[in-house]
Image (cartoon, rainbow, N blue to C red; front, top):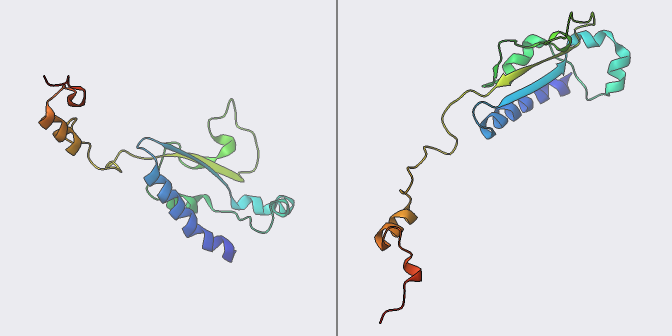
Length: 137
């Protein structure tokens, strides 16, 4: 279990870095295995020693700035089922989180024509192709 505790800050940092890397309105789909899976030792044995399970209530803080949708974090078998949900253990949970609109990562947009290169072009004459001038006579 120590190994799982050391990975939680890493997961939170990774999700935070991902939040900074994507545009506003992006969606993050996630799933994880809950403590109910511990009741099935054969499944845990197949996963290997690096595998660990989480409590659903403990996953929400790991999302950080990501905002879960209105459906929240729910058992995967009950998320938007076609018909009545199957009667299976709630061992697999998941959800969707959204990156909310916020300040741009690249800063404010400049108005067109306000870059230093645009100013240089204006000094040379707007719309004229000064490098293709006809030869002087």
